[in-house]
Length: 296
Ligand code: 5RP
Image (tube, rainbow, N blue to C red; front, side, top):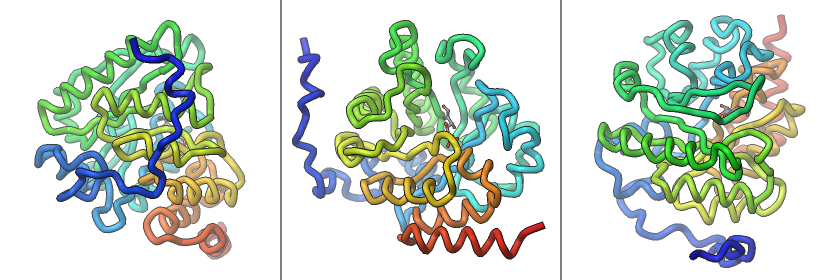
């Protein structure tokens, strides 16, 4: 049996050494993926920067009409053009996202319980629906450490990978929110690695203040960070900068964009960090300038 304590003491993360066996494709851990999958990943991640700014607005599937998402037609649609990829549910896609937006879709593929009951009791949709909607990635949550739902959600993700592989659609393993989520490198590293080991092509997890580079280094596929709760804009930009600096391949950010007092200014500033190597100061100035020039 594998040593339960082994991961606690893990220390040889090869910091600064790029992952090997990635020749021929820009995205970590996906060099051996088939053509269709590489094509979809190259629409989500910019092959020049190797990074992506995904706009997440799937929150309603567990939270209902949370702040900023009451009227997605008014608040989200104007932001879509500034994103590289949108992360949402089928309900949002069908009802408010213009099919003409031509953005790759990271599709909320698992469905389940809400914040009013017990999170993470999930099941999967039909792959036919994802194909009909022409999605570019299947997103599935994995609740590591949840004594009730861990096994089921890992099985869900494994099935998602199998279905995605059948049709050349990559899987986004999402380390779940819930009472078992601990924002430290040990938990996030464990959860991310389990998603990758079970076949996810990309992982979405949270940033942690200490040793985040261990999370990215110990994960053989790209990591994008969720933004989490709304922070002051400069703090959110600082988090994005540190995540990229420590090996993240992008952000899959929601509330820190759509709950900002200048959502367009904020997504432009995040883009500058993720794609152009802007400093936090430069990005913050960009946000402030956009905000002051576009005040109602
Ligand atoms: C929940 C999700 C959300 O898309 C995610 O939390 C991103 O949004 P935010 O930046 O607001 O945290 O995957 O499981």
